Image 1 (cartoon, one colour):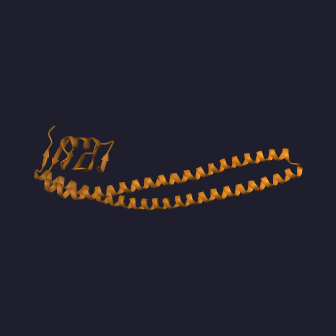
Image 2 (cartoon, helix red, strand yellow; image 1 turned 60 degrees about the vertical axis):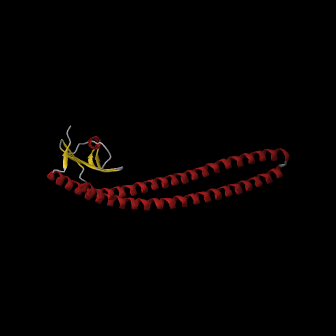
Image 3 (cartoon, one colour; image 1 turned 180 degrees about the horizontal axis):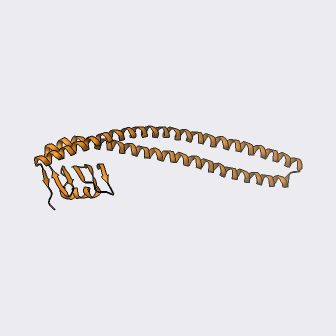
Length: 219
């Protein structure tokens, strides 16, 4: 996993890639990152540096150990942020599912209405044939009452389902908001830790160049 700052469209005047096994801490371009992997030749810990067109590799154990602590902290914060992001994605899916359920409930109520209307029409035809005017009037009143009862039951059922789904959406949305706050806090911590790590790496680079611990990479 790569942490730090990667420039996609520009080539900075100087860059570094701190390679630490499974993770890297960088302040470089995409081209620098690829070049660092080629120059290092393996996943063994190393600090790749570019100053202008000159490239260097620093493999001094003491330097890498000192920088490894800062790299580990930045990586841990990045991992925590990724975990929160995954949790937020799950919550988003839950909200979407609850919203779809509300829509499904509404569609189901429309289907029920159609069935009820058809039954009422069929009942009306039978009554028209088999009953006299008074009987038909009674049938109409009975059908109207049945329709009203069916409509009331349907509306109550739909309202209940919507209320349950709305409460579920409210709960998960509240959790998502809390996770958003936590992610913002971690992002701030990572920003501070990353800036501190960059300063430490640049200081280590200057010292390694001055002491001869940085090996020039020959093309």
